[in-house]
Image 1 (tube, rainbow, N blue to C red):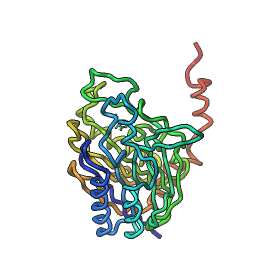
Image 2: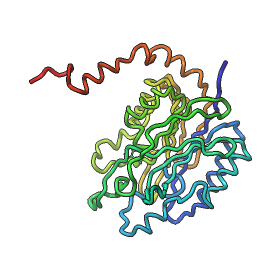
Image 3: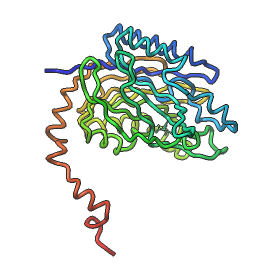
Image 4: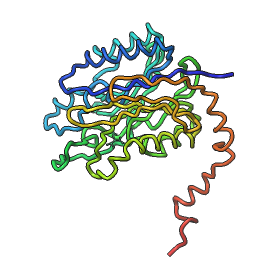
Length: 314
Ligand code: CDV
């Protein structure tokens, strides 16, 4: 028995600040139609896919910031994506800036949703690892103000049972989350079979420019390791190219549970990388090398964290 989910990593090229939601959605719909013609079950879009990557600017006025946020999902401009999911019978992952009113409080998150082939939201995730800084840092060539504009996600790393061609266990993460082993392991402990990750990664890292030449290597390293160590597929999707003067890596990839890259985008524009993902391949790793029940030693890890056994006392 094989459980095949045909996934398209739907990379987006640059989105200018002046571009409207309607224009961006039109590009996304074109990618969805293209994915459908290739027999895809699921399309994965990048982080904050509906607008330019706005945390690169310091805004004084809250109205300027809130213009980049969605107040409802689906909303007037995004409804077309949900309609397309239903008419094409094609699921999607979408990253967007979420403005929510909860407990009488306005809250802002960097969010992703998983939408099934009937156009129903079957999963939601709010980004936990927010990189960058909270105050204006004028010395930088560009800002990275996620810590100013978003709260830390409060939904944990939930896994969702859903069906996209085949039934499986799906998890989501957003951009910087992919660099942290905890992201994959928390999902791995829930037997995840596909992790979907959208990202916006500049080539230039202002606090550590010595890392710039390694940006593709690090991108692949973390997702390949996360896939292998948890016996899961990983789909990483970029917003790529020169966006408002900032060069962003593309390098969208689909990684098998073996850790091998099986599909990749080769441009920095709108592009699909398509892979037939057999979810049953996960078991080959989950039942052997990474059989958590047999081989993990959580009691030992706890002891080390509590410094009871690992480091000799002073
Ligand atoms: N959007 C991101 O989370 N970007 C970070 C950058 C700032 C390093 C990333 O980890 O790719």
